Length: 283
Image 1 (cartoon, rainbow, N blue to C red):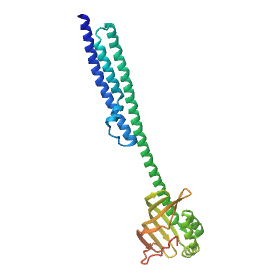
Image 2 (image 1 turned 90 degrees about the vertical axis):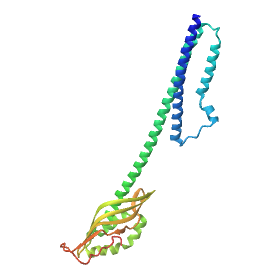
Image 3 (image 1 turned 180 degrees about the horizontal axis):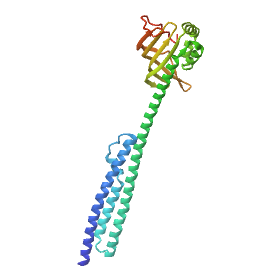
Image 4 (image 1 turned 30 degrees about the vertical axis):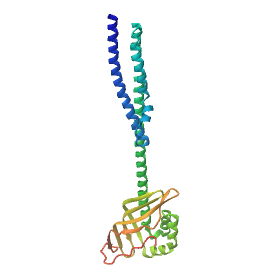
């Protein structure tokens, strides 16, 4: 009677331990499945719904649980086994389960690290792409300001030097379009004693597609001639840029979008009623 009671007590303790461990394993398995689905969705998009067929092959641990339960039932039916064997089985069974639990926990940690790693890579790529785009826009803006500054800064004392600088900031085709007018521009600058300065106020970058870009540049311009001074505050110019040999260049002659606020004075600063002629630096 005493031996039977000890066996029944041991069986009840084992049952309680198995129920607790089974519940713990179920929670871990549920976490594994959720993490696996999340990783799959992060790397390849939304996960496919589980079907009856995939469910059969997706839970090998559940299958092992079923086999073990059957084995335990078989052991319980063998009442004739010595008590020592029963105690040895009770000692060995929890150890086996602890090994399986450690395996599951290791798998969970692996999946967690994989999910976090994948998410970090996606974030890093997005940040890198955004940063790269911003850097390109900044380079285009800086280059556009330099181009307008060159085109609208000249002095009749060095007309040839200005025309050479002008060609250096334009594409080959745009420079070829302007070059036939060099003689006319030189005569105009020297006869009218033209001196022009430009101060860039703002650059607005439009679309950038490959090696092409469009910009609007706001500039303050002061043109001094032999007859007077014309000042334009906030004039806006629009033009396109093309990258040739790795360098952004003006792909066309800048078009005047707005003259801004203009003032005209004589050489002593007195207001003039008639505007001072404003030659285009490319015509």
